[in-house]
Image (cartoon, rainbow, N blue to C red; front, side, top):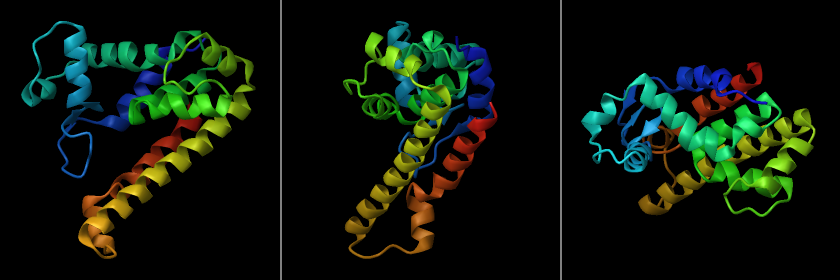
Length: 190
């Protein structure tokens, strides 16, 4: 069965420290944990509502607990037989929320409800892990390109003209696409 200890260093490596980039829809983020995710985590734990300053002081133990309880467990990844399949599924939900469950569910032919239950897990574990990994990889590349193109179209509608390359790199997901694809490509080495 898959082990979180094998995925956590990969995610940590790609996330870095605190950022609050206006072009990033996630807002204030530390080690890949957005302020919204941290608020949800603190609510679950009955902690006071966090501030951005508190997010800046996120501890390693809190980070790992967030990864485990809000992402790894969301995919019930302890029950996934293939480590590489668990890695790409959990990393997808980490980076894209519910889309990282719904899209794989559609691919597996199970109800795309965003909830990992017995049918979803059975479909994941029944599939050939190499073929499933490649299909998930390709679907994730498509997803990243689609959200980038959608953000460009939305921005161009807003400004009423075609955006310049400089504008796209300043304001849109295009700024992040190369890094997202580099990260995804590196998951093959896990």
